[in-house]
Image (tube, rainbow, N blue to C red; front, side):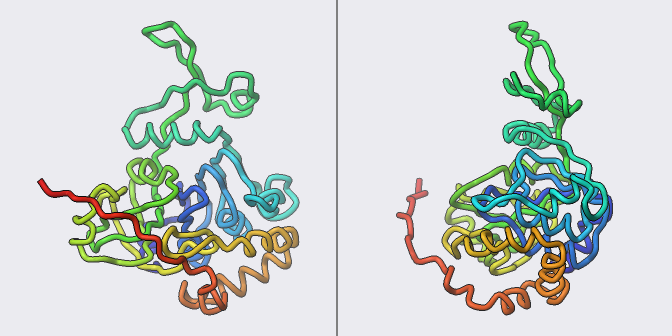
Length: 294
């Protein structure tokens, strides 16, 4: 992870760490913090704890997003303090709806300049965000909203498994990992385990991101904790609830970063400090095989 971040994440980059509650790569976010990257534009549909931590650590100049919070627990208080200018540097915001962010990544992946959508009617978002514009459909005359393409400098995707070529397989809840990867200039895939190419070829429909789009593969067990990896470990709900109290107190948040991010050399050190993560280990529920013969 140290090598992948050093090579592919630079100061001033536009960075996407995707995963919709599932497969959020905290390990990569922590390494970006450890390497003290600055002036980043952080993009994500749902900025949650990892972006709160990166904002608190001074990594972010701007946040491009569609919803921000600690799911099921409360606010992101480092984010709030930055927006309200109550601590840390100023944070620029660019806000869309969920589908607006999806549309931006779809346009980026298709190498189109913008994407049209029936959205934002009756909302204040276009007034708050001048990048949301309108266009008249040349076929129907209907006025549609538009959002500009998003082409990140680097996208980081956590997946269950990949081979050494970077062919990454994901199952369970999907977000916009594929779109974000195809829209990006550079892609880091982080996986729970590295498998032989025969495993990938034996179940090709599960390959969400092909190796041809990938610049680096990192093997990082527990790399998504406290989010979850279907089939590997469950979401650490206790951590999410506990983050509410930690993030409310700038001193407590700083102590967390010092102990769990700066104070460990890598993810292995983090896992050791977390203690009994085995309590989250997933049981076995294997789906039926598929006959790909012809």
